[in-house]
Image (cartoon, rainbow, N blue to C red; front, side, top):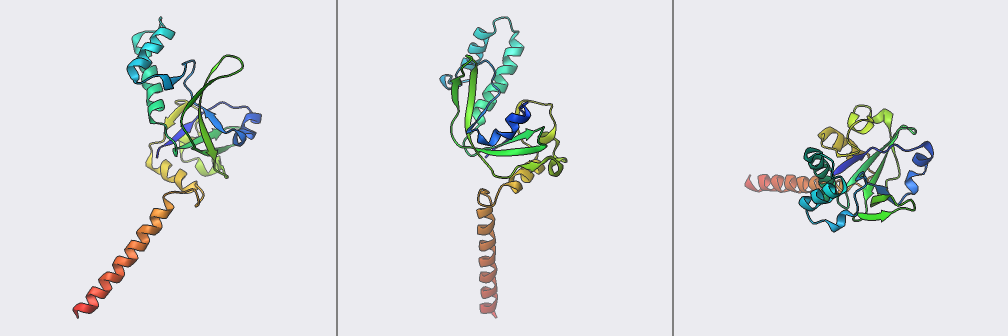
Length: 189
């Protein structure tokens, strides 16, 4: 499971209504449907056709950014969305596969369905984790800092925290091992 931060510049109204959305838009820009592409080479050819005057280095950077996100985002990943006006971070779990749409204005929309976690994280509790609260940086990036990942996972409700069940299993196994060692020691004497 990966954790992503998705920086969007939303209005106050959009932030207030974000949990009513059933999908989040991914920052792939004016690229058409990515599900039609099989590999980064096809993505590069598509971008070269769309932007014939862009230098090869610019195309390569776009391919790297787009294909990494497209190839690595998966159901059950967590997306943290900083909400600047509300001064909080909304958390969502990806609930399905990527889909492509064209909106009423003819703009490309790259979406992933999401399920929202009930409680946002106030900025005040996340100040230490600047990759979550700062406005600059990639529009979407994987959270790789261990401390930040642990922080986000710790903010998930117990019922949603799929690692919580492993903690109890490990505690149970450790207790069982302790009892077995105690019995072995008693039987040896």
